[in-house]
Image (tube, rainbow, N blue to C red; front, side, top):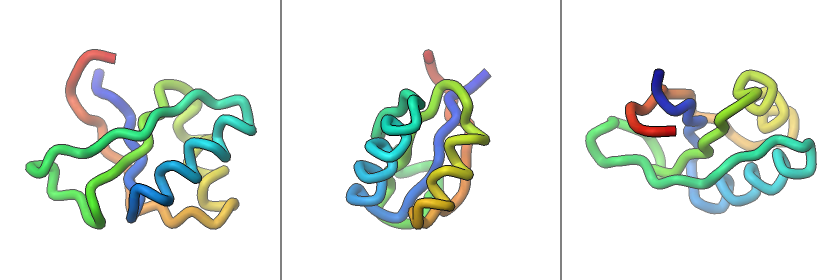
Length: 76
């Protein structure tokens, strides 16, 4: 099982998104995406280990533009 990553368009949106999720009691982390993932934007994402579907909906409702989701391989 990989790491659930929510892709966003900038580091600013990633940081704002992390703060919004924290206010909703969802633990999340800003991470840089590797260049080989083919991600759009500046290559930042929000790693949400739990409640990822709920987190994505909260971000969208809060005005954070979500570019998609990926499961990145690696230790959680």
